[in-house]
Image (cartoon, rainbow, N blue to C red; front, side, top):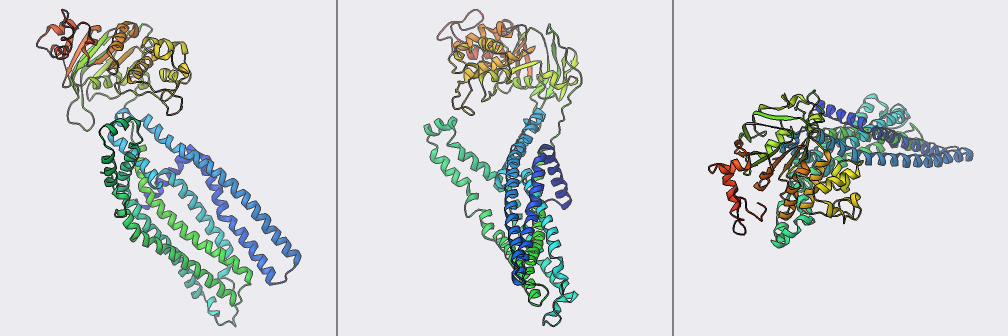
Length: 638
C-alpha cells in the first residue's frame, strides 16, 4: 500500500524547499538565474505601462499639450516594444533552462541509483520510492521540478507586492475634499478598516485555493497506484515482446476489461472527480469569487476617492493597477506558500530516496596488480540472508579456490548458487563469516578496486542499445582488434561477418532504426565476449549456455580452455555436461555445500546429490544414444 501523503509543518516545508533550491543551484545555476530575472521583469514591467498610461490620461484630462502627449505616447510605444523584446528573450532563456532542468532532474535519480549500494538498489523498497517519485512528477508535476516553478511564483509575488506598495501608498494618504459628502474616507479608522477588509479578502482567496489543492495530497496514494495500472495496460498492447502471447491466448478482451475495471479511478465515480465536482471545485470557485470581489472593492474605493477630488482621472488607472497588483500579489504569495506546503510531502518522498545511505564499507586497501594472477579466494564459514528474509540463502559455506582453476557450481533452483556469486563479487556482504582474498577480508579492499578482479556473465544480463563494439568494451573508446578477438572466442564471429556496420552496428532499434535484433543465444555470446574483453583474473559464467542450442553449446565448451586462459573460471550450471570441463565441482543444496570433488569422483558416489542430478538429466538422452563409462550420454549435449 502506498504511503499516505502528510502535509509537513511550515519548518519542514521551508527546509525541504530550501534544500531543493540548493540542489538546483548546484546542478544548474542557469535555471535559477533565469527564474530570478524573469520574476523581476514579470513583476515590475507592468508598472511601467501603468505609470505611463496614467500620465497620458492626466494629460488628456488636463492641459492636452501636443508635445507632451507625443512624448508620452512615444515613450509608451517604445517601452512596450522594449518590454516585449526583453520578455521574449527572458522567456526563451527560461524555457531552454527548464528543458535542461528536466534532463538534469532525471540524472539526479540516475546518479543516485548508480551510486547506491547494490543491496539497496536490489531492494523493492528502493524501486517503490523511485516509482513514487516519478509518478508524483508525471501525475501533476509535484516534487523537485515543482519547487522551481514555485520559486518563480514566490519571487514574482514578492516583487509585485513591493512594486504595488511603491505606486499605491499615496492612495491612502491623499486627502479627499472636505466639502465632499464622503470626506469620512480620510478618517484613520476608515482607512484602516478598508485596508483590513482588502487584506482579509486577499487572505481568504488563497486559503480557499489551498484548501482545494489539499485534495491533491489526499488523492496521491490512489493516483500513484492507478497511474501504474494506467501505464502498464496502456503500454501492454504496444509491447512487441508480449504481442505473440496476447494473440495466441486471446487476452485482448481480458486486458481491455481489466483496464476499464482497474482504472475506475479515472471514471466520474472515482474520488478525485467527485471531489472536483464537490468540495474541491467549490473551494476553488470560492477562491476565484473572492478574488473577483477583491478587484471590485479596489475599483470602488479608488473611484470613490477620485470622485471626492483626492486625485485626477489619470491616477485612477495607476492606483487601480497598482493596488490590484499589490493585493493579488499578497494573495498569490499566500497561495504559493500553501502550494509549497502541499509539495513538501512529495519532496519528502524524493529526499527519502536521495537519502538512502551507503552502508557498505568501501575499504581502503588496494588489490595487488599481480602479473601472474596469483589470487586465492576463501569462503570461511559464510552465512547470508537477504534483507527482510528470515531464511538463510547460504549457511556455513566453506570453500577455497585459486588462480587457474575451473570451478563448477551446481544444484537445484534456489540452492544458493547465484547468491554465492553475489557474495563473491561483493554485491552483498556476508551476514556471518568472512570471504578472504589472499588471506585478507575482501571488505578491507577498496570496493572499486576489488570488483575489477571479476568478469561476470549474469543469468539475467542485459546488453545496451548501443553499437556492438561499445557493448563488448563497455566504452565509447575501445580496441577494435581486441573486441574482434573476444567475439571470435565467444563464437560470434560468423554473425559479426553479416553485421551491416560491423562493430558500429547498433543492437536493437531503440536508438537507431537500422539497429539489428539479436537472438538470446547471440546476446549470450556478446555477453561472454564482454566478460573476456575486461580481462579480469576471475571469469564467472552464470548459466553461460542457457540460451544456446546444443551445437553452439558444444562449441563454447570445446573452446573452454581458450576462453578462460590463465583466468580462474567459475561456472554456475544446470547442465551437468559443463562440469566435465572443470577441475572441481561444488554441489549446493538448500544453501549449503553438500559435496565437492571431480566429476568422476562425485558420479561414483551413487548416494550423492550429484549422481541423482546427473541421472535425472541422463535419462532423457540415453534413448537416443548410449552412455560412456562415466554415465555420459554420447552424441548429446549432456
